[in-house]
Amino acid sequence: MAGSVLVLNATYEPLNVTSVWRACSLILSRKAEVLEAHPDRTINSPSTSLPHPVVIRLVSYVKVPRFTSRRITRRALFARDAHTCQYCGSRARLTLDHVVPRSRGGASDWENVVTACAPCNLRKGDRLPHEAGMPLPRAPRAPHPDLYLTLGTSTIPAVWRPYLPSAGRDPEAEPELPLAA
Image (cartoon, rainbow, N blue to C red):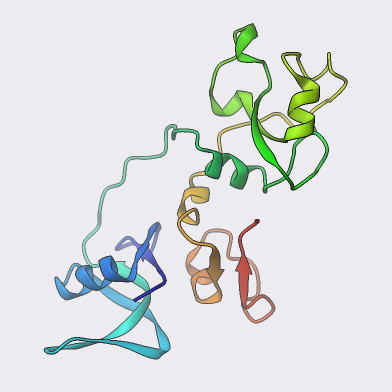
């Protein structure tokens, strides 16, 4: 039962990505319904058979606290910055860099951290970007809450696209997009 399942609220708002096992549990307890299933797979037990879920919708609305601030993780930071060094554009040997170094009073918050490759991070050291001659193309900011939806999966299946806020693309043209690596 490998794979990830997109979970939608009763209002079709994306909530998170979960495992097939958890999705089946929600379906069997009648807390969710299958909206999209894998065309060639079923999940069988001695007493029942289920379609292999790909997208499920909760039957009852779940009130979700609005996004305030999420903890910074390397995974989320790299995803926010498209797995690219914000100083030189490299995609190799990525690290977390404090724009205003902690040694100079810089906070560990979304507005003060960026993805940097190891050579740029070493070159910048404990200086400000303008002091090191390494300006940032844009000021860092907290990521959009939708970023957290796809952190649990390595690809975004085409069948999820109509349910995601950034689904303005043609699923036929892009069958499955690997997330930035």
